[in-house]
Length: 415
Picture 1: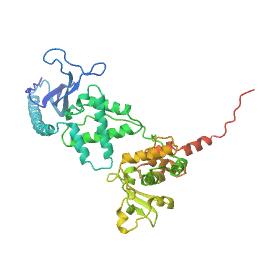
Picture 2 (picture 1 turned 45 degrees about the horizontal axis):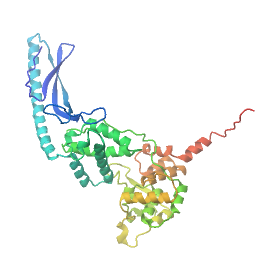
Picture 3 (picture 1 turned 120 degrees about the horizontal axis):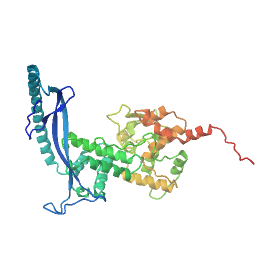
Picture 4 (picture 1 turned 90 degrees about the vertical axis):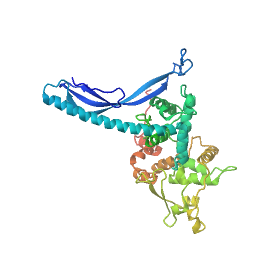
């Protein structure tokens, strides 16, 4: 059998796998390091050494990370002819050349990764710096993702030690699985998935910057029924009750902005940034580009017809200079959410209403009014009808109509 002489310190090592036809397939085996996970008892508490030099220190499970690369090269296990021996010699020389090239590349990558990793001693600091430099509309959700991750560490036995400082290499797949379970246990609807998506976004950025060799979130997902509307909606009657409700210290700007969202289907990040220039007063149109999908969707531009009642919520600029002014100068998202919840409660509406419920209410009420799904999809700025289908399942009017179409139930018990 051909003998592969390798040095213990070679990385990768040239290995062979025996085949049934008398040959062996050559492959490279890479050693990519190890990860340490705390050993926990049945109650989820860290296990400590009780004797020896390690007494009082926590125990860790060590997992070695190896990877194989098939070279698609073959040698004879027991060469019989001079030609087979020569073929083995040439094949092994080529395999060793490839192995040496891979080793040099690995050394270069590892050294660069090591230097960058030493600069990032705390993943929390890396996360906070990412948030500070983040400029997109979902920055609030990125902050929430970090808060939830720290809360998970604090509340999970075995991980509380990482609350203040956690090195990038201590982010393991087991930890991510536990984090997903935590999010699902402490959230509802689309919340856990939305938070997890933002968290993965930061980890992918860490991979891009060579802070992590790969994302520990790979292969771990949170699945939800995307065809079911999770948030509550306001009916047209409830919206009328809301408009008729006033109280001391109410904020009319927030109220007008929320009503505008109810009748135009806008997200908070859009209604808080539109200017008078987005209104075509001559043709009674709202023309804007959605912040959430700007730059990566062909359907990010939206045109919404406006009637006189909706335009009364907007008003008009008093001069040409005011055309670039924001129509609804709103406070923070949190302040707006509190004001809307207070308004809904004063109106006697027993529903959990957030700002995004205005967008969902818009879609459902349009369908209840007889609009077809394609029209609703266009007005909402959806890139596909798939995103609009969940509104059809929450369309009470159509469902009631469908049930009533079955006819009357005339049943009486026998006397």
